[in-house]
Image (cartoon, rainbow over all chains, first blue to last red; front, side, top):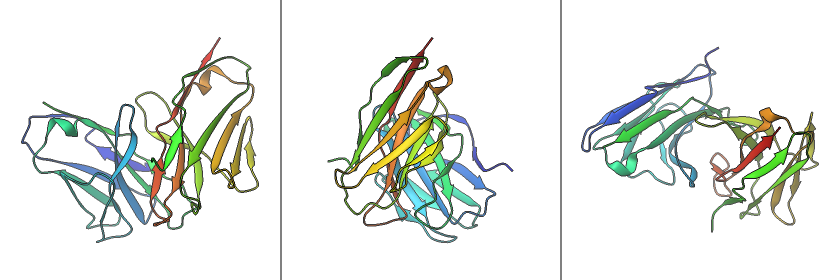
Length: 113
Length: 111
């Protein structure tokens, strides 16, 4: 049982380049999330999805887009990377209902130069 | 004001010590509460949920105080392996499907 898998694990981008981060879960979870984690700021929600074909904005959505075409996959796109997007990105999923916690992927370390 | 606030620490304690962390939250209608553990350069992992009546899991005890809007985590008989950052998580008043994370409290357990 793989849980939540993120690819790639590391990436270096030049300013203005684009990329897509992939998150895949095999637990049949309804909800999926993308967070970024920066030193001293904790985890901040970028976008989330409450089901296949649905997405919603979180706290810091600017500069990112997402898609959830299949229940098991949640993609995070950076259309034109900026140095401010240098961060560690975590994907998470969980079951329907507020009492269930998250399962996180192992993260993607992105550096934009 | 942040949704969730934690003392960043670090808390430096000797092995065998008892240590407690508090976390305050701003929305009185928050419904779900959790403690997560995050090791350096790793993903957060669920440590335990926090129930209204308080709950215990081995050396770990979690408490909820709704009147004062804080949750606590008590670790007894600290082990070297308990060294990590502990994150407090609460859900959103306006969207029970959205959760907010504290910045974390760092614990260093020394031999």
